[in-house]
Length: 122
Image 1 (tube, helix red, strand yellow):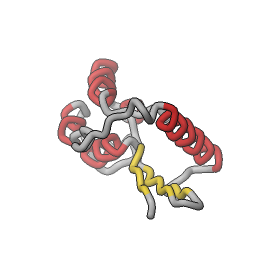
Image 2 (image 1 turned 180 degrees about the vertical axis):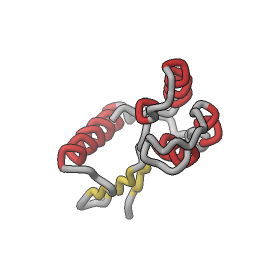
Image 3 (image 1 turned 120 degrees about the horizontal axis):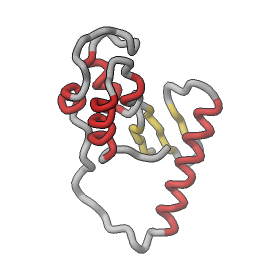
Image 4 (image 1 turned 30 degrees about the vertical axis):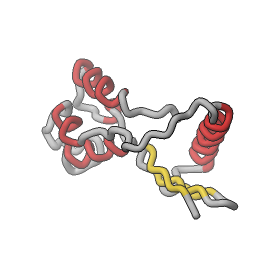
């Protein structure tokens, strides 16, 4: 048995005897994710009597809503071929508003406000 989480563009799989994380940049990133995971597990354990099960899935960012907040110029300055690809990365949590060099402050605020309802603190 295992539990796989998809968080910020990463797949984290918990097994009885190990944890696997894909697409890590370096050991520092792995340590950061493991510390976050440890905090989350310990907090859940401490609050286990207060936790009520939820039977519907959590809301997920909509790529089209993210795309609406991007410049849609397909400039490639972010390193991706289109704004749609960049929007997908934002929805996965792998990129954020600051990673789009063409966004003005108002657009960044709009995108950050939209994404804030889905964010986890890692």
